[in-house]
Image (cartoon, rainbow, N blue to C red; front, top):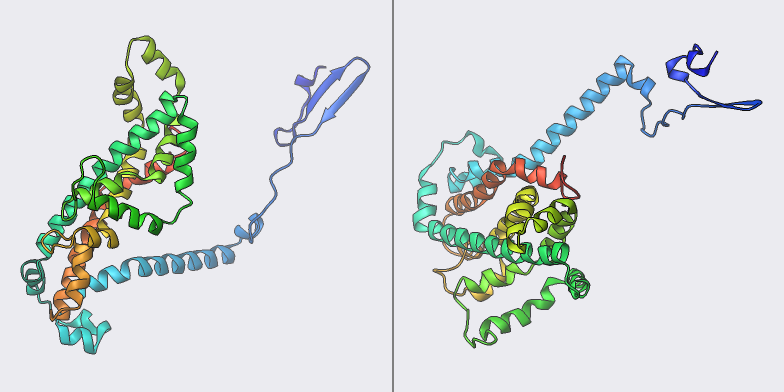
Length: 324
């Protein structure tokens, strides 16, 4: 009788190796050891399962309260009376709504023009970041010239430098742009161009481009496709998830940036909402109108994330490779 015909149980099946004059039996690999605080046997007990459900439910409620609580409170404060906010901040849930606060914040506090400037800054910064980061990552990952390792090392070295170190050189560059010898102060270019050079985005995109199958790129080159066509027809379609992540991070980062826009956009008519809100807070504007301005500036990034959360989470999950 051969070892295939032996009546062995499936759970404890072993490999039988026949050798001349000798038979050796190798045991199946052992089951993985338990590493959790609660064993698998305890999890089957009804009392343990009930306590786990209670703890998980409380943790979920706490996370929802910590995440949505400030946003919901600011939403209610934006349509509440100033006196009610000052005297009883947690009692505003039962006060009547004053929708005129939103109108006063949009028109009187000029939150509308500031949001328009913020959208312009965010769109320009996102577009500049995508163009520069994609081209740099494509050169380092796919084209790979001789000087690519030197450039890659220089880009990685900038990640170890605090951003405040480059603040003064960037400001001097904006005051007198090399070659052209013009000043970019009070122009959106002063915000767009510095935000385009992001070492973090280049590294993230390069790592994703490294996971693109080289057989596809080589086949495209054999068919006569040039570098730009390979980038446009192969690399970019395969990299849409990570490009969406980079675009969303760039947009949110430029939306909440405060120090650099304040330095290069001193004109109130060009300042984004991140610079306008501190100025509004120190003015004579009623507190309820200030809260309405804060809510209007806060709700747009939240809605933007909710719309593109699927692409964002997919890009994060496939950042280390291409999803099959």
